[in-house]
Length: 242
Image 1 (cartoon, rainbow, N blue to C red):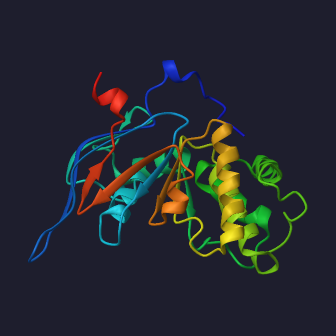
Image 2 (spheres, rainbow, N blue to C red):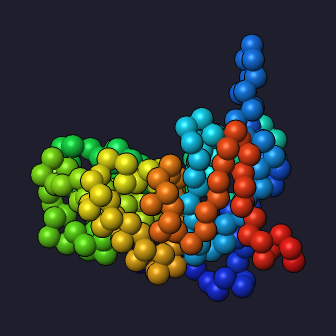
């Protein structure tokens, strides 16, 4: 389940390039949530962003997902600059290029797995028949061929998270952002979800996991740490020293 237009890593830009990124929330006492962040994520990377509560993880996630804008700095997503985009343009880019997996699943309780996955395509204006087929294909890919017509209330926590992963993948995004994807799961079920992410990385996807759990971070190929808005390890050493 790879993106249709994927090429070789040599002829495509990094999925994420952030340079000098900062975010300040104004108020009586301005809060510097991010300070001079540099972050580069290559195509096919499996990256963990780890830090304590209040470190800036959520702010960085929101900017990565085009849900918020930086105060200063540059963010290129799949080679496209994002700073000057209007809100409709940001929504359109987000709908096509970014998949989200949240800790709390965010599934519609009265709809089947297939219908929940189809919602990932609504903003892409994909025709109904194609939406249904793509949803079926991706649910089969994440191991839910026999559960695709079940509603969330009829599914285990692990199955619901697989539906959430499928909803992210159905867009065929450049970047998949996972916000504490095992936070509501027991150890065994969380391990199964992480096994699935391992499989997706083998398919060539680019995945970023936001976590405070070192066990989850240890499953990824690179760790970026954030503390008091400062990012460490955002640029791989092989790039920074070249």
